[in-house]
Image 1: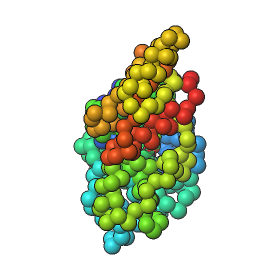
Image 2 (image 1 turned 180 degrees about the horizontal axis):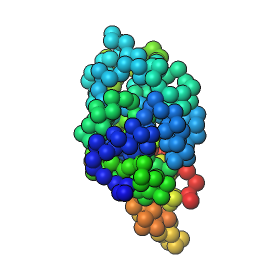
Image 3 (image 1 turned 90 degrees about the horizontal axis):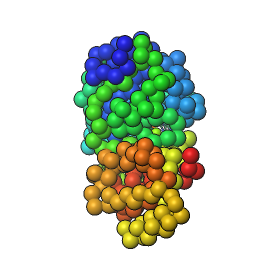
Image 4 (image 1 turned 90 degrees about the vertical axis):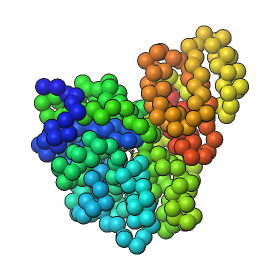
Length: 313
Ligand code: TXA
Ligand code: MG
């Protein structure tokens, strides 16, 4: 049996039988299990190599499918954000509903909820009529996947082609993970910058938003994450990157300079493929020009800072 397919009905059947399915979303691929099936969720965590106390986002088909998964106050800020941004790259931290398995939230009273914008995954969610717990479909701590081939490279050897599936929906158009907003605190707070710029969230809430303080801090988030094997060096401008690149090269290292600061939409879409390509091409040192902290620049700076914090290897 084939591990890769673009058949949403097959993906729904596998999930219903307790399988684990990599699903395309507009941000990155997720590794999904039914969020009310504790055994499937535990196996999904084991495949990813993720600690059991690290919570996962629950994906639902649309805002009318929240019942039992989360509590959304119709008059509160979460409803404003949901109406404006779903389907799309926004995750809301809400009070958890009774259908969510403990294994999804690590026993927390809150749950991250998102309505993803990808036609294949929407078809799977509608067919199932259930929530899907899905972290990014990479091995824990490594670079997130934005194509089905990335998923297969990381997890292909671990998935069982008779029960699991990689649902191929092409390359992810946004390329960085969703923005996570904690709506269980007042005012709401950005826990992780992502595909919806923080400025847009603040505007929708008339400024009643606490911005992320320092690196993203959602439960279980680590300083080092999104890590390729090469060393990453961050610079503020092109000239500094070229200078550093030259000096590393004279020491005999294989160096690449990456500067996509002229187009942040393209930079986000290409980020994880760029990090993977550096490893595939056996680059030792990747020197990256950081974009400014505006729009998608917040998410790019967060991911690159975490990727750079990892020891090479
Ligand atoms: O775009 C995305 O958000 C992708 C796609 C697949 O939807 N998912 C994703 O999942 O990035 P993951 O697990 O790699 O990152 C989600 C983060 C976790 O690091 C976790 O800290 C946080 O969301 N999170 C999830 N549920 C939470 C909860 N109940 N409380 C606090 N943090 C939570
Ligand atoms: Mg992840």
